[in-house]
Image (cartoon, rainbow, N blue to C red; front, side, top):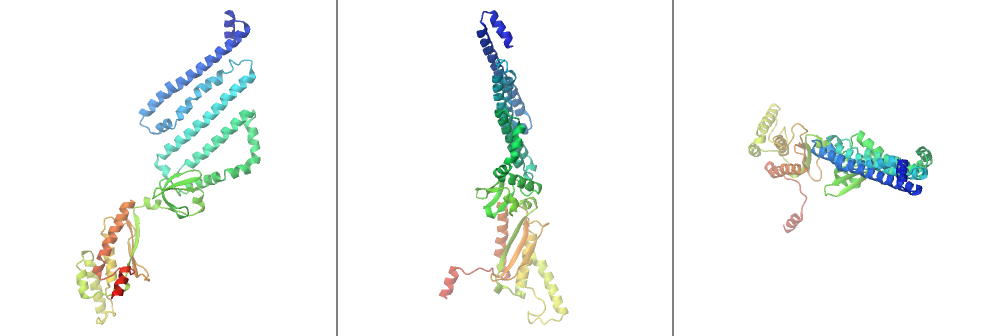
Length: 415
């Protein structure tokens, strides 16, 4: 092409030097025009057409490719390829200049390729996170590893082109730098290994509620990356934990509760020891009016009477034989109340048990599961249950243990 232009100009009366210079300038201008034309076609025609198709499609993953500028960065290859393929024409017979120009364009294309792959990996991560599987198996740490590999390979290729050496020559010299690289990428390597263990064992995923007291973390997992895990605490602060710490140290994951059919309620009411006693006839008649335990009391009272009669027990003393107690009847009432409660899961563990007496009285522990796992609703249901039990406990002639307050001591002093 250069020779044709040069001969054409010579025929029009140009001298040899001017014809050669003009031919080179014209061919260079034509190449620049073709590269600009390629850029226009790639961005204004092809890219815009593809963008319209993507926005109209019913799929969402292709919108992510557009949003992350994968296609936009890919379009930059059009002018670069035109220049790379044709730059030798205006520089014909100047091999050094051809090599320098080609290498510069090649460096640009390698850099552009790194950016395209980076954007593509970002898009893949966002697309994957739109699926439910991402909550169990996060891949962000793996895409970050791939990015490191891509940047490393790209850097090696760039350096190899600049110093005019084979990439294999550079890679062969990395053996001596292995110790340094291990030191520099220590956290990255530990994070990558930890990420594999976390994923393989399904220990943590985005959206999980975890507790790790050592690091002050108590909230939802926002992100699991190559080196850190971000946790948004309930006070909306953000705690970052090194990924490998989740392998080397213990933490609590509430996912099991979230995936189960209920959220546990485990709380005790401490009964004053001095209020515990046997039920007399008057108390028994009064408590039988409570519908939830009417049948229980009648059945239990008949059972006790039959036992004492069969064993000819001297009932003049309550110590002899069997007798109903107010605390036992209260436990029966609590169990019946919980079994009738619409928000208690009857298919899961339901216990009303008496724990060992202590300096704060006799604990009556409730161990049940609430159907509603939402934190706010759960707390309201739990509060409603204990509001009711604390209000009715006096019906059983029991008292809740409470340490003396200032007003109690003041009243005692006045007496």
